[in-house]
Length: 279
Image 1 (cartoon, one colour):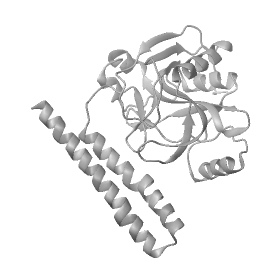
Image 2 (image 1 turned 45 degrees about the vertical axis):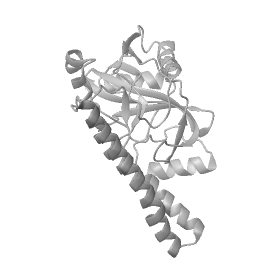
Image 3 (image 1 turned 180 degrees about the vertical axis):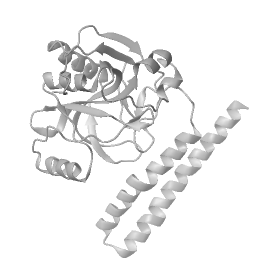
């Protein structure tokens, strides 16, 4: 019975794929081509397919094929698996900020109209933007709480960066390595010492996302090296001391980019003390 259900699910997903191709080629493109010059029709069809149709079809397909494994990847806004979870720190918000400031990393601007426009200009003219915003990835049912980055040269297209999600220590100790841990949506207080679960990757240029073909950063697939680099940077300034490795949940095959990872999460406590006023 289980094999039959799985077969029916795959047939349904295949049918969705065929319908999607028909919709994009014979409805969207044909309609746009009758009203616009060919090059504009192609552009409109691409934008509609990559940012409207395909994300929704993929989200629906993933729900149909949901296998209920524990995730070790963050989730994109389209419902795909994004950057792997590979870093965890223990400390307050101010300690995390002080630790990354000590190694010369900048806190990312919040994503909004002004920061998005500034990012577009930086990309087009290849000018420095050390606090460039991050796209939103999701873990624990919410977008990242904070993110940090280190520019590579003066180009906004290349950078080391990491996103963090805060989890209360009491809950983390009870549910670490269990499915309930990853479904936690509670957000601790800003002055509380918490577990900061992070996903660190290295941007290397521009590329298209798989399946939806949206424009995004190209990333170095070796997230083990990026994890080790981030922790080494913090150790260099004595922001952290002992690093321990823990296994994340089973990896899932559907994701935006291809990564090579051993599945380990590097965990350390932040040592930097902060003043009561947050300085």
